[in-house]
Image (cartoon, rainbow, N blue to C red):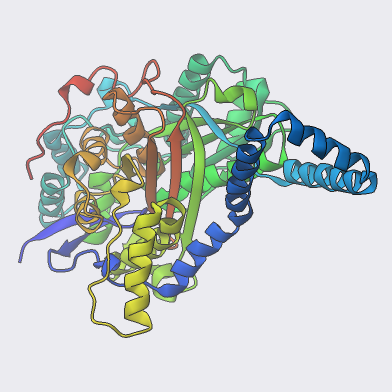
Length: 509
C-alpha cells in the first residue's frame, strides 16, 4: 500500500497509509456541539426579535393619516406619566444597548512577506544540501525525496539564509535575522500601504510557535518602530499553525475594551533553529514542507475605518481538545533516541484532527448556514437521535454559507480530505493548493497568502464571506469568518503580484 504526506494538524506533517484518512466527521455529529452552536445563536435572539417588531411599527406608522396622528397626540397629553415612564425606559434601554453591544472589528489591510529570489530552494538543491550536510543516512534521504515529490510544493518555495549555508547555521543570531527579515518586511509593506503611523498602534499581538527569544518578538517590533510606551503587546508561543486565528481573536477582544484604536497581528514561524538533523522519519517531514513566510494584519474598531477597510470580522470559533491526553500529545516536541530535538507525531493524529474539525464546524454551522440548511440538518439529527430512525445524516452545504475558503496549507492530503468531506469544488480549494505550491507550509500565516491569492484573481466581491480554518498542536481547530465590505483589490507589493498570471498550475504528484 502506497503512502502520502499529510498535514499534522498545525505543527508538522506525518506519513500515513492511504487507508488511514481523515474521519468522515460529517456523518457522525455530537449533539452537544450542535447545542453549543445554537446557544451562540440564541444569544442574538433579542436582536432577531426586535427587527420584525421595528418593521411592523414602521409599516403601521406609514399607514396613519393626519387624523390618526392628531388622536394619538390627544391621548398622549392625558397620559403624561405613561409617556415619561416609557421615554425613560426607552432612553435607559438604548443607552445600555449602545454601551454593551460588541464593537465592529474591521480589517483595514494586511501584508504577506515575500522573500528575495536568492532564498528559493528547488527540489534538487534541497536534496544536494541534505546529502552534503552529512547528518542523514541513505534511508532518510530517500524518504525526504519521496515526501518532496508527493507534498504538493513547487520549485519556488523559500528557506532562510542559514539553511542555504554548508554547513547550516542554526544559530540564535541567524534565527533572529530570519525573524527580523520576515516580520519587518511584512510590517514595512503594511504601514506603507495604509499610511498608518506606528505610533497610532494601540494593540500588538505576535504569534510564533517555535522561536521565542528574550526579549520577545513583540518587544523587537516595539523597539524597531518605536511604538508608544502604553501599547498592549502580547507574544503567543507554542500554539502551532492555528495561532493566527487565535491572535486575531485576542486582538478582537482587546478592541472591545479599548475604544478608537488600531491593533496589529503578526503571524510567522521560524525555521532556522528548528531544522531536524536526525534520522527519525516522523521528525524529518517538517524539513520538507515548512518554508519561510509571515503576515501582518491591521485591525480597527473605528467606525470611520469601515469605508476604507477590506473586511469586517463576523465570527471566530475556537475548538480545543487539550483535555484529552491523546489529543494533547499527538504533536509533541521532544528529543529522539540520540538526543536531537524534533516534533513527535502520533499515529492517531488524523483521527484527532478530524474530531476537532467536526466539533468546530458543528459549532460554526448554526451561526453561518442558511435557515433551510439548519432545518434539514436538525430534522435528520433529531430523527436519528430521538427516534432511532435509519436515515442518512444530512450533510450541510457550506458552499451556501461561504463564497471563499482559506484552508491552512499544511499538506496536500488534508486539503484533499477537506475538499471531499465538505463537498467542495476544485475552485474552492484552489487558493490553498496554489499557496502550498508557491510558498509551502508557512504555518499560521498561510491563510493570509490564500486570501491574497483570491484577491489577486479578482474574485472577492462586496458581501462575499470568507472562511479561514486552521489546525494547531494542543490540539486545536480554529475558524474565522470575514465579510468583504466592497469589491476587494490586491494591495500593492502583494505576494502574488508578479506571478498570479501563472496560476493555477497543474500539480503533478
